[in-house]
Length: 114
Image (tube, rainbow, N blue to C red; front, side, top):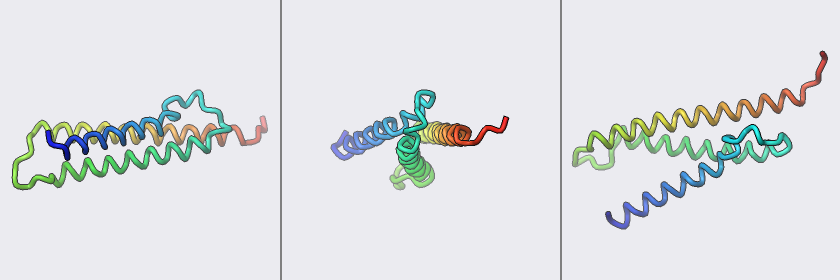
């Protein structure tokens, strides 16, 4: 492997480590106190934004391969498609966790008439 490819892989792994750190509060949503919900909301929104950017890059790589003069291996295309489906599921899961946090927060602030 050449230096450029190693740098690209290291950068991608670094971005994924950052995404995991940003989205960790959503994974452990039951232990989040509503006092710090706004901090977790912004942090999670940044993480979801990064996931959407990586998803867009993956879709671009599937539809417009960078090496147009040579044929892309089928296993590479299959991996990118499976990866994009996993990212889509992750994005949907994280957004649904944010919605649950929002609904819990709204439920706590609503007055109880019963």
